[in-house]
Length: 216
Image (cartoon, rainbow, N blue to C red; front, side, top):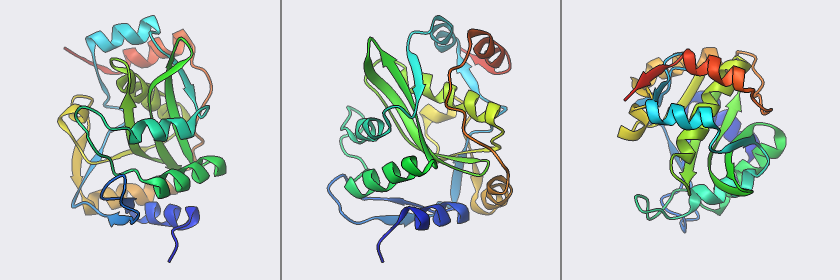
């Protein structure tokens, strides 16, 4: 059976998502972790140095202006990630979801160059973070903070990170059992929310930063 964008959305609605074994693997496998990573939207932790960068506007942040380029960036080999689970099938499906209005990118730009970002899928009031990348220091972290700010503004109630890592846990990501996750998911997908992709004022950013937890 060929995987379509509609089938992919139905899978997200019940708590499963696809991954490939490697960039060159043409097959996709359904993933349903026993423990699920989520970032509570009211519990974001932001390191002090990153706050300074955010206030200075080191990177210009845009949404949905270079979605396919963000996926390609996430698929690039990196020092700590020699291979990736993003194959050409993933590229096609999520680009189609973006064209349908269900997938979104948060992009960091510097001097006209894309230097980092992330992408994910929005369904109701749930956002499923897929992958992120950086070509400049802290660019993906910058994008993550802006993602949370936009999700809160838009009325989202769940940010699913799929897994947890030491890097993500610094920002407040926690793991919860599958059954607990599915209860949150059921409520979230029935919540009305529309992803905000516009510009954010300095005053709005400052207000958001004041509402979050500062870490060293």
